[in-house]
Length: 266
Length: 242
Image (cartoon, rainbow over all chains, first blue to last red):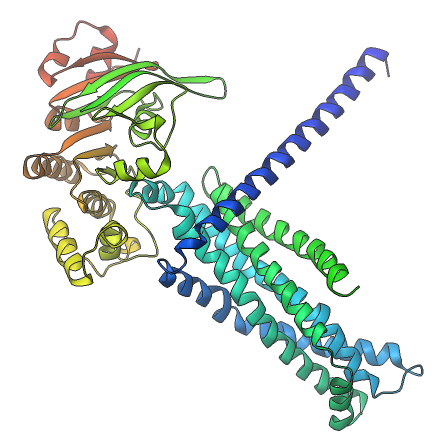
């Protein structure tokens, strides 16, 4: 490659890297500003309680069937995997303990969050994105109604409250799934499975998983609100916002899963 | 009174408003005309504080919209109503909830009082009995009328119309024009409408201003615009291409 062309090529790569870095920082800055505004608007929590209840229904109650369905199979897979890995190495009484720790610490909170990110996070981004491109958010502004307090804060609160509730249900159902596999497939007794659960149950495992799910709920709601409120253009923009919301949530859930696990389960 | 003084606004490198000066007197209906994409809606958004000018000022009764804090802006907006081009009704709320939302958020009225006011406003725009419908069940003209009912729900002093007749058939457009005229006399409103519909402009306007390449190139009564010697104005009102 001639020297001049080589310099131009390198400059273009550097420019692209620089521009992408600036864009990334700007996006993160805007997301943190939104998070700050939502936190400040928490003082209106009782004034917008009906919106919060509506969002809790959407986030929690409507998500329950898909979360439970995923959870029962998650528990069953955990049972099959644990039995396979323990074969010939560990006595079967440990099966309940292995499944319960995997479910309470990791599988329950993380898989619930990923399922909810796909369902609710996408829904939030699509709804707010459509409101943005059809000037409904501007209409709220012109009516002297703060979109942060009216639209974003109720979703944030619903996420923070309902994600742990869903996780508790998911944990329970996943343990039932694990029990089904243990009894029907592995061939251990219910009593042995329950003993494994009981003897190796640590409150810290349950609480740690629930603390994670609070953060995951906040991530899902904030990502949906941020990408929805930043939507530009028409249907294409709404589609991009929806995709970005789910991808951002999924990546952040996994990153925060590590950070919180490293903090709680040291 | 609304006083727009030397407003500049650009998006990236595109200059949309390039020194707009315009005064709207209390009680009058000012119609701003101009070609598609000339910045009419951008100007309207500056008046209600949805956009901030790069330079210049918009003063409503002496208050500079771009220099007040958010709390003061919200207090000012309670005195204004706006009808959006696509009506911008909230999809998840019924017609009655759309119209009553501002009252629910900002007034001390009981639910029954709000319901009475909503019914009265819907009656004013010829939409009685539609309170329980969802926006998706309404036609374009009905949406505009509900949007109008929502805009006047708080009894504003000023009302802004963004393309009030665009996308409507001529008969429905004329009904909206009649509504705008009726509301003005009934509620003593100061109105600003942006449109490229000259039939509508001639019918509702006390004065017409024409925006062209970021500047106001004409301002006068509907009679005066017909006699304007400016070729650009004549071409626009007669609908003639270059």
